[in-house]
Image 1 (cartoon, rainbow, N blue to C red):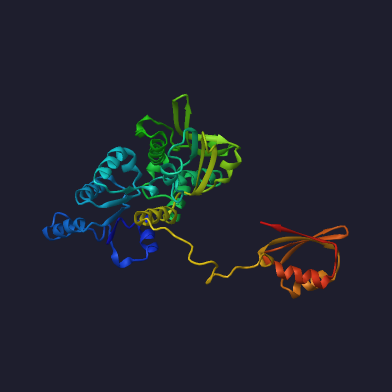
Image 2: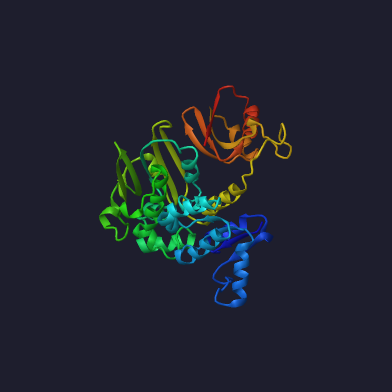
Amino acid sequence: MNFSIFGLGNVGSKVFNILKNKKKILTFSKKNRFNCLVKFNQKKYEKLFQKKNLFIELIGSIDVVIEILLNCLKYNNNFISANKDLISKYSFFLNFLFKKKNKKIYYEASVCGSLPIINLLDNFYSKEIFFYFFGILNGTCNYILTNIKKKSFLKLINLSIKKGIAEKAYEKDIYGFDTIYKFSILISKINHNFICYNIIFLESLFNLTNFIRKIFFEKKYLSFYLNINNYIFLNVSLFLTKNILLKKSTNSYNLILLNCKNSKKTILMSLGAGGIPTASSVVYNFYQFFNKKTFLKSNCFKNNKIINKNFFCLNYLIKIKFNYNIFYFLNIFKIKFIKFFYIKYTLIKTKKIFYKKILFLLYFLKNDKFFIYKIL
């Protein structure tokens, strides 16, 4: 079977590099695309769909994608997409049409980068009743808000484009359309009904005031779903918070917190923006299509070497009685350290070192009264 990737941008190029069988992959971008108006290329374009290929669409615009989708359905092909705009608007019709043809459509990459939330909602949480759901669904907005105190708004946008966190057409991210598309896909899965993005209340990040930039609270762009006796509240807006979980989800990280009837609270956190995180979920859908299951090959590892726990390479804190020979042996064993003196005892904080070296050190000192603590 051949595979074709439509769009070789930030995500498409990463997907192409990750996949192994590159001889079977056909790529289409602005430089090497087929022009359907030319007769010779039109025949090639039609033959391409007749071969029953797997199509990976990473273009972004709906106008071009609809033509590819219709041809996929016409010739019974499977489809993988990362187009959140397309799926949020037409997910009901797409699922219906692909089921009718006994084919599959995958769109894990359209929501939260490397976080497999759609797979969890389809399988693990398929029969759950959700009380509330909130999370950071846009990695670009989260990156801007975490660094807004240090740099200006425009500088952060340019930095995010250079790092590959944001697209060149960044308007959808800042105005909140990107987040609202993702949120509508997730709510449709949670509620088991198609919910259009027009219903959701939206507040954009554009033109933040100086007061909000310099305020003490952490600023997070959250999507919030609350269900109280079948009355549903939907909101995508800027929140000021002191929550520890939300504070730790910095830069381009996405965070989702679910509260269900049976499984109770669940926290999910992963990278949500950038080429490689999004490409990882596309590749996951690619291998999911083949349904390959892994089994245990042998009783024990053959190629991999298991290291004993005494050889762990970590940071250590050693408390020991003061002795001048300590520094002599530290230099012999090449143990990098930061010295702290406290009355009769010495506190030695080492940089990452093997545990065996520290045991040798303590053996040469021949001191019974010592304490070792591992630091992560």
